[in-house]
Image 1: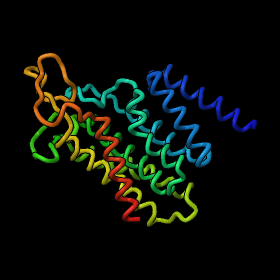
Image 2: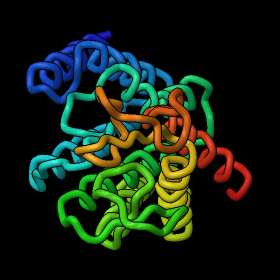
Image 3: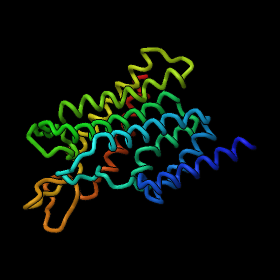
Image 4: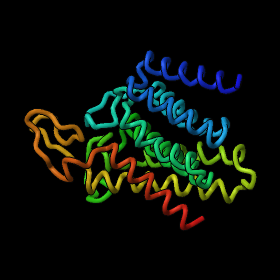
Length: 247
């Protein structure tokens, strides 16, 4: 009983601190607390570690590698809201609730970390960025754009979560870690493909291509309803299915 009281206090404290520091909106903080409590109760307190690694590493990269966005895409410096938290961590929480395979839980966070690291590192180094489908130059930070630095960052992000298998899985070996990292990296590439092919892009006469709809902009490609959050959710979901079939 005492342990659960401590967990509850810790979860609420985490939510308040992340909201106060501007990392999460109120809705995002509440969603993070709920997911954390579900994971701790259903899978064990130790399974909060992948969530912390994803959240803290993503925030740390954003602070260590500050950038001034030109693309104005959806993955900007605004606090993560409820939808963003659910799209990135919801499947992780659902797998914990259902008692799903623990390797798949790590896969979801490997995909989320890979995508976030790729985006942040790619925007910081501002190397030539190309649409993954059309192979033409696009602004750094635009969904569907890839660069060498961003791709390497995505691989590192997937590996950062995959390495946790050594701590969390009883049967973990190098093969297990590599396949989790590989599917995480695959998910990042799939996210880019979905971003380039389906996500809404808007063309502004002065600002150029952007993932964000502004006054005076027109839909250039994709669908209005296909947001960056939905792309993230689809990439994670498909990666889980791929891992389920491959593992």
